[in-house]
Each structure stands twice: as structure tokens, then as C-alpha cells.
Length: 393
Image 1 (tube, rainbow, N blue to C red):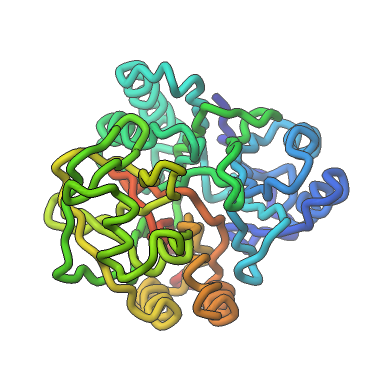
Image 2: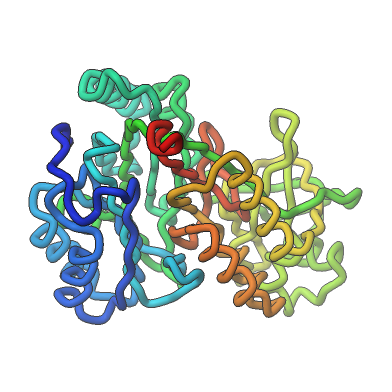
């Protein structure tokens, strides 16, 4: 648990409410040195790093702690990065929160397989109280979660956290491993941790908007999960037929053709609380089962969704976030299946230009968290605006 409470004297970054930078992942020393030069080291409340799994992860974690000293550094591995230039790969993307505008507390939640919700809730409630005492004149809060994307425990974790957070909005992303699905990690205190999550509670004098959107429209085509293994997020049967074969039939494909590209193009959604949420398919198992990115259970009705134009939708959605004022930065957790779809439709360039123009930085995820729900195939994040006093100047 760490915090920074005393703003430093103004320096060359004094006008930047949020600082961002990126560097190639290859040489940890060189990369972290560059990032530190770009965002500073002495006046930050928190640093967040989105790290390509192509890098030397232990070395990057250790170097980050050495370079940023007493400033807390958290982060995670990615399925791709979003830098100030848009979609990228093999990079480290950094976000710095100056202590002139932000105070923060960080909680490592390890041993997720042994998760005790009451313990997580108790610690989080205490941290919220401490955070309020650190900056009593600042009333805006949000929570940012990064979690092992192969843990299969995001649903249970966000349920516990949302109860403890009360009115404080939470967003987050599941750490990725490109499309390898082998190992995912979160970064905390100079180490990469598996089977873990890291939560940042942040209080600020800036205006913020936590958001979540997708470009999918539910169709009339429905299917029912008739046999499943909820703990492993595996569906064995759909409509009383082998899962992969029946899904392929419904979308008009040969089962042998099923791939992340097909899953991105033909997503399925469930209706929860009056809203549709994606239950994205991760892969086909050798026996014909379907493994999902998020919670699944027998009896669940899945609705096939039709993607809208992803580039046009992104431009409009991010434009809506800029109607009242332009964000200083947008921190985004972007589902890997959105990137897969963009690549398939040759829209990566258009999306990258839109992301860059709207100051979006972040990473491609294995799933996204929004308050009490773990979702897929969305863009979820926070838009951070200048403080009212700066907007008025």
C-alpha cells in the first residue's frame, strides 16, 4: 500500500494533468529511462505501465522500481498496446498521474485462487476511508483494476470490489498475452505477479467520466447453453448439440473454420439488468467444446450480435466524450477481439488515427471490468478532463 500526498513544486510538466509516453520493449534500461524522461519521476502520485509480453518482464519490473524510486508503479501485460500513436505492439506504454492533481492508494490482491471476498471488501473499504482523508477537498474518485487474464476469477473479484467501493466507479482490464493464452501478469512493487490483481484507488481535482461501450447490435438469432462447466467457462453443448458444431451452424461456417476472427465477427451477448453484455468466445477445444472469456452457465440464452462499422462507431463514441470539454487523456481497456476484428476488416489504421486524435492510451485485454460486471468486446475506460479552475482560465 503506497500513497503520495504532497504536491511537488511546478516543473516542466506543470500544465499537464496527465502525462503519457511509450517506448520499445526490447531494452528495459533504455525503455524505462526514456519513459522517466518523458513523464518525470519526482512529482508523481502513481505510474501505470502497459507492458508487451515480448519483453524481459522481470527486468522491466525491477527497472521500473529502480527508475521511479518511491513512486508506486503498477501495470500489466497486454494483448497489444495503445500508445499516443494508436494501436501498437512490442512497447511499454506509460501513464503518469502528477501529485498536483491526484492522490492514490494501491492494493495487491494475490492468490486469486484462494480469493476471500470479505477480506478484499474489508481492505478496500479501509483504503477508501484513508484516501478521503488524504485529499478531503477533492471529491472525485475512481478505481482502476488490472487482473490476471487467465485467472477465470474476474467475475467474483469485481462483485466483491463493487460492494466495497459503493458510489466509486470501477473500470479495468484483464491482462493479456498477445493471442497466446499462456501467461498473464500484473505489475506491483518491482515484480510481475500471476494469479493476482492490482487495484488503484484514485482521488483527483480533475473531472472524470468512466465509460463502457461496444459496437454490437443484438439480432433475433438465439441459442441456449444446455451443458457447461461454469468454473472453467466451458460450454459443451448448445441447443443439445456439440457446442462448436452448433455455433458454427448458426453462423453459417464450417466448424473447422472457427477462429478468433470468426468469434470477433459473430459475437454472442446475454441480457443482464436490461442491457446486453458480450460473452466472447476465446477458443475451440480439441473435443469441440467452446471456452469463453467470461462467465457462462447452463440455461443461459445467447443472442448472436451483428457488429456495426467499428471505425465509424469509435469516432462517434469518443466524440461524445469530448462534447462538453476535451479530455486531457483517455485511459482505455480495449478487448483483443476488437483489435482482431479491426485487423480482419483492414480498419487498424483508421482506428489508430481516431485513438490518437482523442488522446487514448491503454492496452488490449482478455476482458474488461465495469463496476460489478466482467464483460468482453468493449472499450472501457476513464476520460480525464482538466480541473474546473483550469477549464475556466
